[in-house]
Image 1: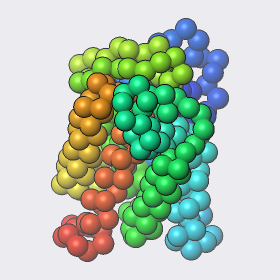
Image 2: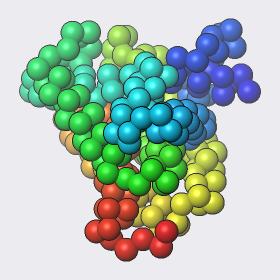
Image 3: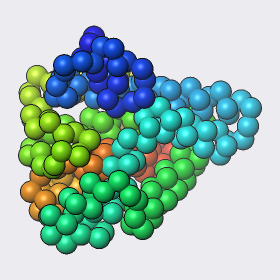
Image 4: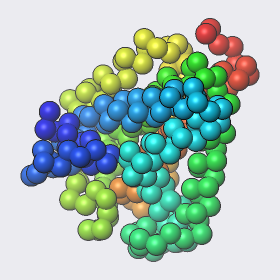
Length: 251
């Protein structure tokens, strides 16, 4: 339970600090999917509440904002830093230096605008009856997709990284715990949608991780944040194809 509280304290703004002393970040790995359930359930609840008061698009915006508040824009910040670093840097040293700079550059602003705009467009196009479950699944699956870089790549970066002090790879037992967090989704969404969405999200994670390995030789905390965001968007793309009528849906 204390390790789970550590995960909530690190990946969100929930006040669990009194339980997180003297713990290693690697101890939070088994709870990546569980954190996704918390964040996804919160955004889904906010959407349900505000959809009863306002129009669909406004409820989606409030839901997205509530997720940003809960996590402190933790992964979005990583995405912006990656956009800045790889947009303005050429050598690994330059990329890492830019990503560790707390200032937000042009590439980061553009990346955030495109990311949030695409996320809003995809979510607002979905039917309100299925949107809460899509939100939950997106947060859970995208955090599961962090398993691959944590297992297959090496951690690199300096002391200013969000994950400074964590160079330990995820273990097979921890992967089992993270995978088990996906299973309850099968009770709420079609298995083939989860299979296709998870497959595309994992493909995005694998592709991005390969790119990071080619350019940097490994991953940083910002790279993991970017991976989570891209994997989430990838799942929403598949869900949007299904429920927009472009693909046949059994629901």
